[in-house]
Image (cartoon, rainbow, N blue to C red; front, side, top):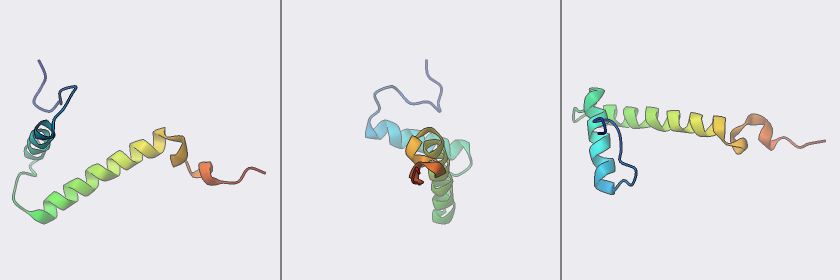
Length: 68
């Protein structure tokens, strides 16, 4: 059994849309306010970018420095 805020292993577009709807509702972002929705999306993208930067070798500040 999966909880309401988890995704199945092989997700469909509908699964993704339903998941986002549940997340928004659980975090009180289920109001029809485009500004709040944009802020929520921006925050989530920032969190994703942080994880990618920390786990991908190309994301580290030293990755682009020339080796001498």
